[in-house]
Length: 111
Length: 116
Image (cartoon, rainbow over all chains, first blue to last red; front, side, top):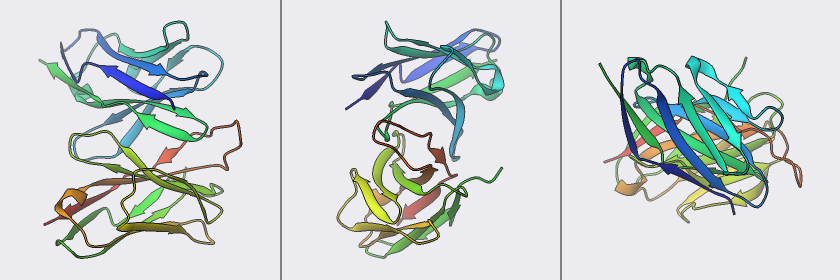
């Protein structure tokens, strides 16, 4: 079965700095890949997804992620962090209708 | 666009009580999934249904049961509630899965269950 590893359970950046949240997956074939954001006491909001086609995908709120098959990675980036980006971020993989989530990365944005 | 609807959004129960969570999928979605997210944890798959039949089973306790109805909505029934059942329960829906095809799952806002 596929699995997801998010490196770093907590990431802290200054407002305006680059955001980089790391996600690696293991799967026998390239899965569908997702990034979700979860604000406190709220549900999962889809940021972006990769299914097929262009490996650089752009999502909401200025986030983007690049699927790198050779590195089995799908890291999430944003050029300039905003205070409102502070939240929990989950990477997820979907293969054969089996959805697996990473453990999550809590992003803190310092003023 | 219509989204996945879950009710209630918040539920408080006492130990040993029962609870029923409801999920209404996106129109024309016939597959429903249930997930449990404990405090500070990632969502864990519980169970899924396609065309009213259980299609896959994850880490769902024996005290829990679920079903899907003819209108494709689903209910998660939880009995003999324990403190550890306190969590956010997500429902997701998708189109009919194929043998080598996965369809994106659309998540509802979740039901927050608190067991006291």
